[in-house]
Image (cartoon, rainbow, N blue to C red; front, side, top):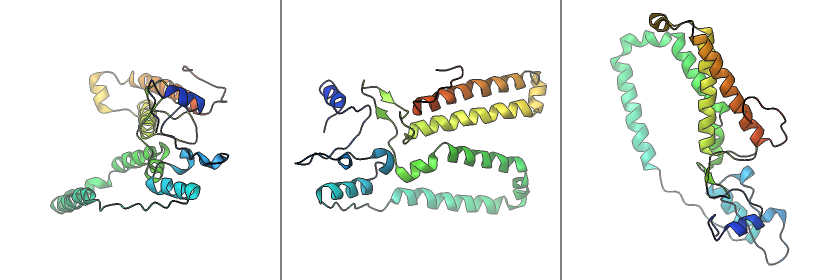
Length: 217
């Protein structure tokens, strides 16, 4: 095992690596393409790694997972508290018919899906990685992979664009009371323009041949 430090930089350069962790199998004969574990396709789950090791070495690894009692300890009280809350507030449930609540819930769900949260749940990527220079990297340099921190950042950026469009389109009473209702559409437009430019720069970084940029390189 080699880490990115003063002693491991040469190894990373020799293997042409720019992120970690990466897994290799070194056979007694000539190496094949399959001897490098495809993290972008298979992820970091123990089952996928065990299957790859078995394919390359014929050594079968059994993955044993203990019961997740913490998950039960969180969900059971949450369901009980939610049920009790609905029972006590059953006379005020008409408030949930307000379309604004459902609109916000739908937007949050859409942002979670397009930012890659379901992909995280399926593939189980690490939160971030260490670059060849030893710094913490939050973005994957390829379009075939992403880190958890990267999806959180994308979620917030898409959310900022959504808020920007809302500010341009809607008029709020408390902004009228503050006397800034004429300024909020300009603020919303600025948010959309700046955040879109930054998102485009991220897209350009992950797709190396993409030629266009806006505000940010």
